[in-house]
Image (cartoon, rainbow, N blue to C red; front, side):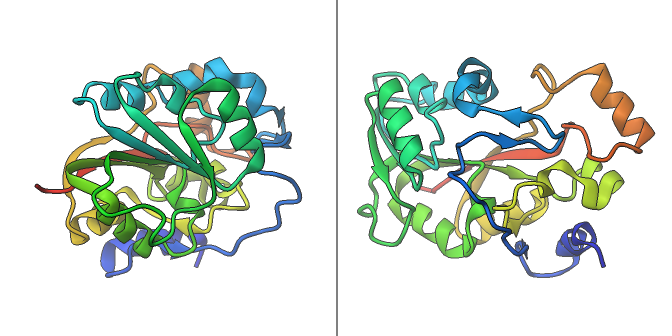
Length: 249
C-alpha cells in the first residue's frame, strides 16, 4: 500500500495521521536547498514572496481584537512581522538561523526551541499559529493538547498543513510534492485534522485551501494536473489546508 493510500485509509479509521519516517537533513532547515522541482532555493532572499504567501493568516489575526499571539515554527518571520503592533507577539522555532533572521525583521519575543508541556502558562495566548508545523511533529496529538491548554478561552488556533488526500496527492501518489520534505513525519488529511481538533475540544470556525489568487495558481499548474505525467505534482488547490479552530469560552 502506498503512503497516499495509507493516508486515504484515515477516512475509515480512528487514527488522525500517518507516521512517515524522517529522512536525514544534512543542513539547517533554512539553508540553501533544492525544492521538489530541483531548483536551489534561498528562503531568506524570497522574503516578499513568502510574506505574500501568509498574508491571509496575518489578515485573520489582525482582524481580531488586540491580544497575545504565538507563532510556533515562525520560520524567517514572514508572518509575525505582518502582525499589527496592537498585539503582543511571541515566536518559537528550533532553528538558530530563524532566530537570527527573525530578530532582524520584527520586535517579537523570539525563543529558540519547540513547544512542550510547560513551555508557557495555561491561558496565555489569544491566538496560536502553527503554519507548516504539525507535519514536522512526531507526536502531534499531545502537541494539540498543549496548544489547547495555552490558549485563552475564546482564543484561536490557526493550523496549516499539507492535505494528503488532495486531488494532487490522489493523482500523483508518491510523486506528490509535499512528500518531498524529509522532515514531514506526520501526514494528515483535511478531514483527519478537523476531526482531531474537534475531538480535542476545539470548535471549527473556518477552513481555507489557499491557492486561487496566489502565485501558485497558473495555467501550467492546471496543465500538469491534467497530464499527470510530471515527475512531481504541481502546487494545486487543496494540497494545503488551513483550519481556524476556537477554544470555547
